[in-house]
Amino acid sequence: MIHKTSVQVVIVGGGIAGLWLLDRLSNQGMDVVLLEKNGLGNKQTLSSQGIIHGGLKYALNGVLSPASSAIAGMPERWRACLDGRGEVDLRGTRILSEHYYMWSTGSMRSRLKTFLGSKALRGRIDALPPAEYPAFFSEAMSRDKVKPGGTVYKLSDFVVDTPSLLQTLASRWYQNIRHCDHVQLEQSSQDAGHQNTLLRIQSGTQEIVVDAAHIILCAGEGNEDLLAHWQAPAGIKKPAMQRRPLHMVSVRVKHAAPAYLHCIGDSFGMTPRLTITSHPCLDSRDGEWIWYLGGDIAESGVHRDAQSQQTMAHKELSALFPWVDFSDASWHSFFINRAEPHVADLQRPDNAYVEECGNVIVCWPTKLTLSPNLGDRVSAILAARDRTDTSGNTAGSHLATLLAPANLSTPPWEAIR
Ligand SMILES: Cc1cc2nc3c(=O)[nH]c(=O)nc-3n(C[C@H](O)[C@H](O)[C@H](O)COP(=O)(O)OP(=O)(O)OC[C@H]3O[C@@H](n4cnc5c(N)ncnc54)[C@H](O)[C@@H]3O)c2cc1C
Image (cartoon, rainbow, N blue to C red; front, side, top):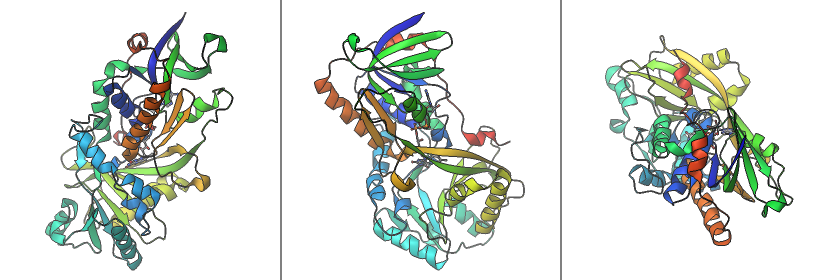
């Protein structure tokens, strides 16, 4: 039997984009159901480093690019949400580090790059005197009497615990977050009175056709497949996606203080040599962290196999942090793609991407950080439609009763034993 139902807003995909919009639109009084095929946050969001960027990373060549300008206001927007003053309620989310640090390791070019970056972002970065170095360094200085060379800067960036972020958002609307096995966009027949795109959902033996005023695609890499199988109405141009492949490394290491820092290297590129975040894992013993490595090692590492990538990471870390003992560390690496809208020459998009295609809205936040920007853009589209469109029905609770709840996924570093 095929069920037919209607709802005002359906969101497909429960990463940060989908869950952020679910909270924001539900807070505005809309009737919203979110559909998730795997586990919430299953792909990019739980694999991300959780850094809420102030944009310095994108100004390392000394130029305040559109990317660094657009992103500059985001940490404040997030902080308002974390304090319960924002458009999305993030109270209860665990912050792993109130600051992110940048360390120029001492060579001339890396110092210059850092300096230029700091000028371009005046006010958002402070060079620290050694007495104010984060615990990660001060521990080395007091215990081993090592003084790290180069300069340490404190950025306005901070780091969120992504499992806790998703848990916070999901717990508010769990009754409207449902599992599906498969969804497909379909054109309604014209004699139905309007030409809205419909959503056909399969879950177990259930088949449901949903007439939604707004279908929001937040399926990350999954958007590509959804768009490929959609026969869009004439005149609608379907957006194209690009992938940015990464080979991430995680290391389980015993070290009292966690590390949150960009290590700026010697290359001419704009990517830090290493971007390190530290995460607790479920069975962490005392003083044990998972160090999670992005930056140039993850970008250039797509051409290495797992063994070579882990050996490379071991070499890099031992060279940079001679005071940390990696002899008992466990290593893990995995490949993952960042999913983004297609931009010429694989350039990084500057902003969250939101494209209106009839009653379908296609979203790629491109960064966790840009979720507030994504929310603004989607809200603006829905507000404009509200003035011209009266087609929205509100029976989300009916759709939700037809489907099982969706569960939270686990971050990739939990795979290390
Ligand atoms: C390794 C890595 C590190 C990163 N670090 C940072 C960082 O430190 N700071 C930052 O700002 N950004 C970072 N990013 C970028 C950021 O993680 C992403 O931009 C963001 O998480 C994308 O969120 P999303 O919700 O669009 O996609 P995803 O998190 O990929 O979520 C998509 C969801 O849709 C579901 N789905 C897929 N297909 C379907 C379907 N057909 N039906 C139903 N559900 C479906 C998936 O299961 C998944 O749950 C990083 C990305 C990566 C890969």
